[in-house]
Image (cartoon, rainbow, N blue to C red; front, top):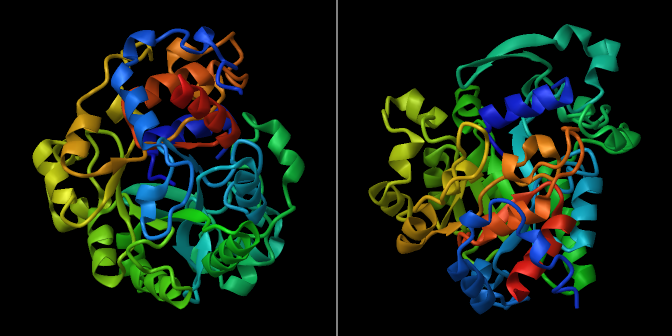
Length: 397
Protein backbone atom coordinates (compact mmCIF):
# COMPACT_ATOMS: atom_id res chain seq x y z
CA UNK A 1 0.00 0.00 0.00
CA UNK A 2 0.82 3.49 -0.18
CA UNK A 3 1.66 6.57 -2.17
CA UNK A 4 3.79 7.33 0.87
CA UNK A 5 6.34 9.73 -0.59
CA UNK A 6 7.91 10.88 2.65
CA UNK A 7 7.80 7.38 4.07
CA UNK A 8 9.23 5.88 0.90
CA UNK A 9 12.11 8.33 1.01
CA UNK A 10 12.76 7.30 4.60
CA UNK A 11 12.68 3.64 3.63
CA UNK A 12 15.06 4.20 0.75
CA UNK A 13 17.49 5.95 3.06
CA UNK A 14 17.19 3.14 5.59
CA UNK A 15 17.68 0.53 2.88
CA UNK A 16 20.55 2.18 1.12
CA UNK A 17 18.59 1.48 -2.07
CA UNK A 18 15.39 1.61 -3.42
CA UNK A 19 -3.53 -16.53 28.46
CA UNK A 20 -1.23 -14.32 27.11
CA UNK A 21 -3.11 -11.22 28.18
CA UNK A 22 -0.38 -10.35 30.69
CA UNK A 23 2.50 -11.16 28.36
CA UNK A 24 3.53 -7.56 28.02
CA UNK A 25 2.32 -6.22 31.36
CA UNK A 26 2.68 -2.63 32.38
CA UNK A 27 6.05 -2.36 30.66
CA UNK A 28 4.36 -2.46 27.26
CA UNK A 29 3.11 1.08 27.75
CA UNK A 30 6.65 2.43 27.99
CA UNK A 31 7.29 5.95 26.79
CA UNK A 32 4.53 7.92 25.18
CA UNK A 33 1.96 6.81 27.72
CA UNK A 34 0.57 10.34 27.64
CA UNK A 35 -0.87 9.54 24.24
CA UNK A 36 -2.97 6.70 25.63
CA UNK A 37 -6.71 7.03 26.23
CA UNK A 38 -8.98 4.64 28.09
CA UNK A 39 -12.01 4.94 25.76
CA UNK A 40 -10.13 3.17 22.95
CA UNK A 41 -9.73 0.07 25.12
CA UNK A 42 -13.40 -0.10 25.95
CA UNK A 43 -14.37 0.45 22.34
CA UNK A 44 -12.13 -2.33 21.09
CA UNK A 45 -13.33 -4.75 23.75
CA UNK A 46 -16.97 -3.92 23.05
CA UNK A 47 -16.63 -4.46 19.31
CA UNK A 48 -14.26 -7.42 19.23
CA UNK A 49 -16.21 -10.05 17.34
CA UNK A 50 -13.34 -12.51 17.03
CA UNK A 51 -14.84 -13.96 13.88
CA UNK A 52 -16.36 -13.52 10.46
CA UNK A 53 -20.14 -13.43 10.72
CA UNK A 54 -22.06 -14.10 7.55
CA UNK A 55 -23.85 -11.12 6.10
CA UNK A 56 -22.10 -8.50 8.19
CA UNK A 57 -19.22 -7.72 5.82
CA UNK A 58 -16.39 -5.67 7.25
CA UNK A 59 -18.37 -5.03 10.43
CA UNK A 60 -17.71 -8.68 11.35
CA UNK A 61 -13.95 -8.12 11.54
CA UNK A 62 -12.28 -7.99 14.96
CA UNK A 63 -11.52 -4.47 16.18
CA UNK A 64 -8.83 -3.32 16.02
CA UNK A 65 -8.26 -5.17 12.76
CA UNK A 66 -4.73 -6.28 11.93
CA UNK A 67 -3.94 -5.73 8.25
CA UNK A 68 -0.82 -7.45 6.92
CA UNK A 69 0.97 -4.72 4.94
CA UNK A 70 1.94 -6.17 1.55
CA UNK A 71 1.81 -9.52 3.34
CA UNK A 72 4.54 -10.13 5.90
CA UNK A 73 6.93 -7.62 4.37
CA UNK A 74 8.90 -7.56 7.62
CA UNK A 75 9.91 -11.17 6.95
CA UNK A 76 9.51 -11.93 3.25
CA UNK A 77 9.86 -9.96 -0.02
CA UNK A 78 6.67 -7.92 -0.27
CA UNK A 79 3.73 -8.66 -2.54
CA UNK A 80 4.60 -12.29 -3.15
CA UNK A 81 2.42 -15.31 -2.52
CA UNK A 82 4.99 -16.37 0.07
CA UNK A 83 4.53 -13.08 1.92
CA UNK A 84 0.73 -13.32 1.76
CA UNK A 85 0.68 -16.96 2.88
CA UNK A 86 2.87 -16.32 5.91
CA UNK A 87 0.65 -13.41 6.95
CA UNK A 88 -2.42 -15.62 6.74
CA UNK A 89 -0.70 -18.42 8.66
CA UNK A 90 0.28 -15.93 11.37
CA UNK A 91 -3.36 -15.00 11.80
CA UNK A 92 -3.68 -11.56 10.19
CA UNK A 93 -7.32 -10.53 9.88
CA UNK A 94 -6.86 -8.92 6.45
CA UNK A 95 -4.06 -9.36 3.90
CA UNK A 96 -3.06 -6.39 1.75
CA UNK A 97 -2.76 -8.70 -1.23
CA UNK A 98 -2.42 -6.27 -4.05
CA UNK A 99 -1.12 -2.87 -4.84
CA UNK A 100 -2.23 -3.35 -8.42
CA UNK A 101 -0.44 -2.04 -11.49
CA UNK A 102 -0.91 -3.03 -15.14
CA UNK A 103 1.28 -4.80 -17.66
CA UNK A 104 1.75 -3.63 -21.24
CA UNK A 105 -0.87 -6.14 -22.36
CA UNK A 106 -3.42 -5.09 -19.75
CA UNK A 107 -3.04 -7.65 -16.97
CA UNK A 108 -3.10 -6.57 -13.34
CA UNK A 109 -0.09 -7.55 -11.24
CA UNK A 110 0.83 -6.95 -7.60
CA UNK A 111 3.68 -4.50 -7.03
CA UNK A 112 3.98 -1.58 -4.61
CA UNK A 113 4.99 0.64 -7.53
CA UNK A 114 5.15 0.21 -11.32
CA UNK A 115 8.93 0.68 -11.05
CA UNK A 116 10.32 -2.80 -10.38
CA UNK A 117 14.07 -2.28 -10.25
CA UNK A 118 13.99 -2.24 -6.47
CA UNK A 119 11.71 -5.25 -5.96
CA UNK A 120 12.76 -7.71 -8.68
CA UNK A 121 15.91 -9.04 -10.34
CA UNK A 122 15.14 -7.21 -13.60
CA UNK A 123 18.51 -5.43 -13.57
CA UNK A 124 20.22 -8.82 -13.89
CA UNK A 125 18.29 -9.63 -17.07
CA UNK A 126 20.46 -8.33 -19.90
CA UNK A 127 17.61 -8.87 -22.37
CA UNK A 128 15.73 -6.07 -20.61
CA UNK A 129 18.61 -3.61 -20.22
CA UNK A 130 17.20 -1.35 -22.92
CA UNK A 131 13.90 -1.05 -21.05
CA UNK A 132 15.48 1.07 -18.33
CA UNK A 133 14.12 4.59 -18.61
CA UNK A 134 13.07 7.69 -16.70
CA UNK A 135 9.42 8.63 -16.25
CA UNK A 136 7.44 11.30 -14.45
CA UNK A 137 4.75 9.68 -12.30
CA UNK A 138 2.52 12.00 -10.29
CA UNK A 139 5.09 14.73 -10.64
CA UNK A 140 8.03 12.62 -9.44
CA UNK A 141 10.91 11.66 -11.74
CA UNK A 142 11.74 7.96 -11.40
CA UNK A 143 14.38 5.94 -13.23
CA UNK A 144 14.13 2.19 -13.62
CA UNK A 145 12.01 -0.49 -15.23
CA UNK A 146 8.21 -0.19 -15.30
CA UNK A 147 5.49 -2.85 -15.44
CA UNK A 148 3.64 -1.06 -18.22
CA UNK A 149 6.63 -1.64 -20.52
CA UNK A 150 6.52 -5.43 -20.07
CA UNK A 151 4.08 -8.10 -21.14
CA UNK A 152 2.87 -10.47 -18.48
CA UNK A 153 4.92 -13.28 -20.00
CA UNK A 154 8.05 -11.13 -19.69
CA UNK A 155 7.30 -10.18 -16.08
CA UNK A 156 6.88 -13.84 -15.24
CA UNK A 157 10.54 -14.43 -16.08
CA UNK A 158 11.52 -12.14 -13.18
CA UNK A 159 11.76 -12.98 -9.49
CA UNK A 160 10.99 -10.85 -6.46
CA UNK A 161 13.59 -9.57 -4.03
CA UNK A 162 13.72 -7.62 -0.76
CA UNK A 163 13.08 -3.90 -1.26
CA UNK A 164 15.10 -2.56 1.69
CA UNK A 165 17.95 -5.08 2.08
CA UNK A 166 20.14 -2.87 4.26
CA UNK A 167 17.36 -2.73 6.85
CA UNK A 168 16.07 -6.27 6.35
CA UNK A 169 19.15 -8.24 5.39
CA UNK A 170 17.63 -11.51 6.58
CA UNK A 171 14.84 -11.18 4.06
CA UNK A 172 17.37 -11.38 1.23
CA UNK A 173 17.55 -15.11 1.97
CA UNK A 174 14.31 -15.37 0.01
CA UNK A 175 15.39 -13.29 -3.00
CA UNK A 176 14.54 -15.12 -6.21
CA UNK A 177 12.09 -17.55 -4.62
CA UNK A 178 8.79 -16.09 -5.83
CA UNK A 179 7.33 -14.61 -9.01
CA UNK A 180 5.38 -11.40 -9.39
CA UNK A 181 1.80 -12.56 -8.79
CA UNK A 182 -1.06 -11.48 -10.98
CA UNK A 183 -4.11 -10.19 -9.16
CA UNK A 184 -6.09 -13.08 -10.62
CA UNK A 185 -3.61 -15.51 -9.05
CA UNK A 186 -4.20 -13.72 -5.73
CA UNK A 187 -7.95 -14.16 -6.11
CA UNK A 188 -7.49 -17.88 -6.82
CA UNK A 189 -5.18 -18.17 -3.79
CA UNK A 190 -7.74 -16.34 -1.63
CA UNK A 191 -10.53 -18.67 -2.74
CA UNK A 192 -8.43 -21.77 -2.12
CA UNK A 193 -7.37 -20.59 1.35
CA UNK A 194 -10.96 -19.70 2.21
CA UNK A 195 -12.07 -23.24 1.33
CA UNK A 196 -9.25 -24.80 3.34
CA UNK A 197 -9.94 -22.69 6.41
CA UNK A 198 -13.72 -22.77 6.27
CA UNK A 199 -13.98 -18.99 6.41
CA UNK A 200 -13.60 -16.08 4.07
CA UNK A 201 -10.07 -14.67 3.77
CA UNK A 202 -10.15 -10.88 3.68
CA UNK A 203 -7.94 -8.78 1.41
CA UNK A 204 -7.13 -5.09 0.93
CA UNK A 205 -6.55 -4.02 -2.70
CA UNK A 206 -5.13 -0.67 -3.80
CA UNK A 207 -5.27 1.00 -7.20
CA UNK A 208 -1.82 2.53 -7.78
CA UNK A 209 -1.47 5.79 -9.72
CA UNK A 210 -4.85 5.32 -11.44
CA UNK A 211 -4.84 8.74 -13.17
CA UNK A 212 -1.37 8.08 -14.60
CA UNK A 213 -2.39 4.69 -15.96
CA UNK A 214 -5.73 5.91 -17.33
CA UNK A 215 -3.86 8.46 -19.44
CA UNK A 216 -1.83 5.54 -20.85
CA UNK A 217 -5.01 3.72 -21.82
CA UNK A 218 -4.55 1.22 -18.98
CA UNK A 219 -7.45 2.13 -16.68
CA UNK A 220 -7.32 0.13 -13.47
CA UNK A 221 -10.82 0.36 -12.08
CA UNK A 222 -12.66 -1.40 -14.92
CA UNK A 223 -10.08 -4.20 -15.02
CA UNK A 224 -10.29 -4.60 -11.25
CA UNK A 225 -14.09 -4.63 -11.26
CA UNK A 226 -14.16 -7.25 -14.03
CA UNK A 227 -11.95 -9.62 -12.04
CA UNK A 228 -13.87 -9.07 -8.83
CA UNK A 229 -17.12 -9.86 -10.62
CA UNK A 230 -15.61 -12.98 -12.18
CA UNK A 231 -14.78 -14.28 -8.71
CA UNK A 232 -17.97 -13.09 -7.03
CA UNK A 233 -16.16 -10.53 -4.89
CA UNK A 234 -17.96 -7.38 -6.02
CA UNK A 235 -20.76 -7.24 -3.44
CA UNK A 236 -21.48 -5.13 -0.37
CA UNK A 237 -20.33 -7.80 2.07
CA UNK A 238 -17.55 -9.25 -0.07
CA UNK A 239 -14.30 -9.77 1.89
CA UNK A 240 -12.31 -7.30 -0.20
CA UNK A 241 -11.59 -3.69 0.70
CA UNK A 242 -10.72 -1.47 -2.27
CA UNK A 243 -8.54 1.55 -1.59
CA UNK A 244 -6.73 4.38 -3.34
CA UNK A 245 -4.91 7.61 -2.62
CA UNK A 246 -6.98 9.15 -5.41
CA UNK A 247 -10.57 9.91 -4.33
CA UNK A 248 -11.81 9.91 -7.93
CA UNK A 249 -10.61 6.31 -8.30
CA UNK A 250 -12.76 5.32 -5.33
CA UNK A 251 -15.69 7.29 -6.76
CA UNK A 252 -15.25 5.41 -10.04
CA UNK A 253 -15.14 2.07 -8.22
CA UNK A 254 -18.26 3.05 -6.28
CA UNK A 255 -20.15 3.05 -9.57
CA UNK A 256 -18.71 -0.31 -10.69
CA UNK A 257 -18.88 -2.52 -7.59
CA UNK A 258 -20.42 -2.58 -4.11
CA UNK A 259 -17.28 -3.45 -2.10
CA UNK A 260 -16.28 -1.56 1.05
CA UNK A 261 -14.21 1.39 -0.18
CA UNK A 262 -11.37 3.26 1.53
CA UNK A 263 -9.74 6.61 0.72
CA UNK A 264 -6.04 6.60 1.59
CA UNK A 265 -4.59 9.80 2.99
CA UNK A 266 -0.95 10.90 2.90
CA UNK A 267 0.58 13.86 4.73
CA UNK A 268 -1.66 16.80 5.61
CA UNK A 269 -0.04 19.24 3.18
CA UNK A 270 -0.06 16.84 0.21
CA UNK A 271 -2.55 16.89 -2.67
CA UNK A 272 -3.94 13.71 -4.21
CA UNK A 273 -2.54 13.20 -7.70
CA UNK A 274 -5.99 13.27 -9.28
CA UNK A 275 -6.69 16.61 -7.60
CA UNK A 276 -3.52 18.01 -9.13
CA UNK A 277 -4.57 16.68 -12.53
CA UNK A 278 -8.07 18.22 -12.44
CA UNK A 279 -7.06 21.43 -10.68
CA UNK A 280 -8.78 20.73 -7.38
CA UNK A 281 -6.82 22.89 -4.89
CA UNK A 282 -7.71 20.85 -1.81
CA UNK A 283 -5.08 19.11 0.27
CA UNK A 284 -5.36 16.14 2.62
CA UNK A 285 -5.82 18.67 5.43
CA UNK A 286 -9.07 19.72 3.74
CA UNK A 287 -10.21 16.11 3.38
CA UNK A 288 -9.83 15.35 7.09
CA UNK A 289 -12.02 18.22 8.27
CA UNK A 290 -15.57 17.25 9.35
CA UNK A 291 -16.81 18.64 6.02
CA UNK A 292 -14.23 16.70 4.01
CA UNK A 293 -14.92 13.47 5.89
CA UNK A 294 -18.67 13.87 5.41
CA UNK A 295 -18.07 14.13 1.67
CA UNK A 296 -15.87 11.02 1.66
CA UNK A 297 -18.64 9.19 3.51
CA UNK A 298 -20.98 9.72 0.55
CA UNK A 299 -18.98 7.25 -1.55
CA UNK A 300 -16.65 5.32 0.82
CA UNK A 301 -16.86 3.41 4.07
CA UNK A 302 -13.43 4.17 5.47
CA UNK A 303 -10.18 6.09 5.37
CA UNK A 304 -6.58 4.91 5.55
CA UNK A 305 -4.61 7.82 7.01
CA UNK A 306 -0.89 7.88 7.65
CA UNK A 307 -0.30 7.40 11.38
CA UNK A 308 0.94 10.97 11.74
CA UNK A 309 -2.59 12.19 10.98
CA UNK A 310 -3.79 10.22 14.01
CA UNK A 311 -0.97 11.15 16.41
CA UNK A 312 1.43 13.84 15.15
CA UNK A 313 5.08 14.01 16.19
CA UNK A 314 7.15 16.90 17.47
CA UNK A 315 10.44 18.06 15.95
CA UNK A 316 12.32 15.30 17.79
CA UNK A 317 10.02 12.59 16.47
CA UNK A 318 8.15 12.01 19.74
CA UNK A 319 4.40 11.55 19.83
CA UNK A 320 2.19 14.50 20.69
CA UNK A 321 -1.47 14.37 21.70
CA UNK A 322 -3.82 12.59 19.27
CA UNK A 323 -5.76 14.71 16.80
CA UNK A 324 -9.54 14.62 16.54
CA UNK A 325 -9.39 12.57 13.32
CA UNK A 326 -10.64 9.32 14.86
CA UNK A 327 -13.59 11.04 16.54
CA UNK A 328 -14.40 13.08 13.45
CA UNK A 329 -14.20 10.09 11.10
CA UNK A 330 -16.40 7.99 13.34
CA UNK A 331 -18.89 10.84 13.54
CA UNK A 332 -19.06 10.71 9.73
CA UNK A 333 -19.63 6.95 9.84
CA UNK A 334 -16.17 6.05 8.56
CA UNK A 335 -13.78 3.41 9.87
CA UNK A 336 -10.02 4.05 10.04
CA UNK A 337 -7.23 1.65 9.08
CA UNK A 338 -4.08 3.80 9.34
CA UNK A 339 -0.64 2.82 8.02
CA UNK A 340 2.10 1.62 8.72
CA UNK A 341 3.60 0.08 11.86
CA UNK A 342 7.02 -1.53 11.56
CA UNK A 343 9.19 -3.04 14.30
CA UNK A 344 12.52 -1.43 13.40
CA UNK A 345 13.79 1.64 15.25
CA UNK A 346 14.11 3.59 12.03
CA UNK A 347 10.35 3.54 11.53
CA UNK A 348 9.18 3.99 15.13
CA UNK A 349 8.35 7.22 16.96
CA UNK A 350 11.33 8.46 18.98
CA UNK A 351 9.52 7.51 22.22
CA UNK A 352 9.82 3.86 21.33
CA UNK A 353 13.29 3.53 19.81
CA UNK A 354 15.67 1.23 21.70
CA UNK A 355 19.45 1.49 21.41
CA UNK A 356 21.36 3.13 18.59
CA UNK A 357 21.03 0.55 15.80
CA UNK A 358 18.37 1.88 13.39
CA UNK A 359 17.74 -1.63 12.06
CA UNK A 360 17.20 -3.21 15.48
CA UNK A 361 13.72 -3.70 16.87
CA UNK A 362 12.46 -0.99 19.18
CA UNK A 363 9.51 -1.02 21.58
CA UNK A 364 6.95 -1.77 18.89
CA UNK A 365 4.52 -3.07 21.50
CA UNK A 366 4.49 0.29 23.23
CA UNK A 367 3.87 2.12 19.97
CA UNK A 368 0.98 -0.18 19.11
CA UNK A 369 -0.66 0.59 22.44
CA UNK A 370 -0.45 4.32 21.81
CA UNK A 371 -2.10 4.00 18.40
CA UNK A 372 -4.73 1.45 19.47
CA UNK A 373 -5.76 3.70 22.36
CA UNK A 374 -6.93 6.41 19.97
CA UNK A 375 -9.86 4.20 18.95
CA UNK A 376 -8.68 3.31 15.44
CA UNK A 377 -10.54 0.41 13.83
CA UNK A 378 -7.42 -1.30 12.51
CA UNK A 379 -3.81 -0.83 11.53
CA UNK A 380 -1.44 -1.87 8.76
CA UNK A 381 1.71 -3.62 9.95
CA UNK A 382 4.75 -5.19 8.29
CA UNK A 383 4.95 -7.52 11.31
CA UNK A 384 1.45 -8.89 11.81
CA UNK A 385 2.54 -11.39 14.47
CA UNK A 386 3.77 -8.53 16.65
CA UNK A 387 0.61 -6.57 15.86
CA UNK A 388 -1.63 -9.48 16.86
CA UNK A 389 0.14 -9.94 20.22
CA UNK A 390 -0.08 -6.20 20.88
CA UNK A 391 -3.75 -6.24 19.96
CA UNK A 392 -4.46 -9.16 22.30
CA UNK A 393 -2.84 -7.37 25.20
CA UNK A 394 -4.72 -4.17 24.40
CA UNK A 395 -8.14 -5.80 24.09
CA UNK A 396 -7.66 -7.90 27.23
CA UNK A 397 -6.36 -4.95 29.22
